[in-house]
Image 1 (cartoon, rainbow, N blue to C red):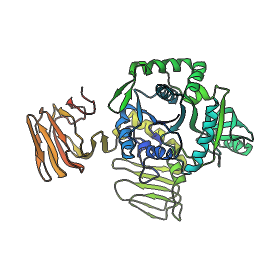
Image 2: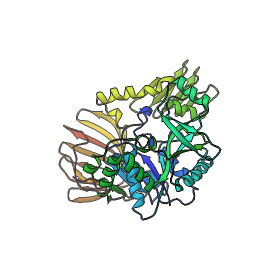
Image 3: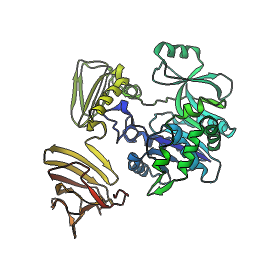
Image 4: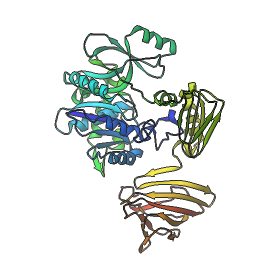
Length: 470
């Protein structure tokens, strides 16, 4: 049984302002216009023989994004395990190993990141076949990418070269400086560490017991608390918090003498920053990558992306310009790895632009801020067909709803009535209310809030189909 394990818990801070804490890069169509990075990862699995239902491990805050993106792809058999808090890849993979073994069969885990790009899918499938044979023999597989440049943003693996389809691991090395990376390339003994792995679930747990027994024991205790909640599987936050944060590389792969590298002879990219997206995207005659409403004159070797308005540039080179509705990034293309410094400043100033876009996704749809001023704000709310907001009230604000598309069912106090296009209603402060979409097309409304306090935390939920009641 081959079980795909997709790790979808990252935040992608080096791709700010497009990637935000509550809507990170794995859920965004960064390269493909249609599919997000997570959806591309799931699509890449199609055609591999003997696949069992996938296991996805994600942050609790992203659970509805994962579920919705799987639903869009027609994947209805995925098991979504929620991490109460980020603990790096070793605990995430360990929980997945226990989940796979709970089905009663020996399982081989194919561990993938949700935010990698592999366009030559046939070569990926070929490497998986080799990895499966190695894992069946009890080996722990890491997929190594043959480097084509002295990349300083990746870790490397030194191998004992052989004539077989795989090589024994000699050592893992950290991200090098440019000169060291070039030495690695020249030697021919190094691969990029792709962060993708393959091993039997039982083999992994045995190795953890030897090299990181505290992680194995903490995850075993946490897994004993697992229970289903809607489409998700939860473990005890208290139990999981006792597990230290560690990568699977440090916890096992760098310790074991049983690790092998299977070469992945494909165009792999971890899409770790804006320069990486420029690398893999189609370019114009001036080697620019342009997305959205963009006009350029005398610009070369740049990445320019417009999300919500016209962006123009004149007479510049080697720039990254990314515009969103509430933030603009302008950076030297050769320094985009330093965007984390900006992110740290945003965090220290507690800026909301670090966490959310102006459009915020919820399990029932989304809302988008149109204008916000003291004592009033306006939002555009979209409710998916068949979806419903919670039954709730607010202590400090009243709401005016105007339907601009579709039809909605409104609960206001003891009343239940329908609103059609061009109709409106008023929700007084302190009144229980709910908005539902009984139709087959998205319901769109404009909501105008008025009151002394308009924060999102002024909400008391009484009933909620998504389990968010207090």
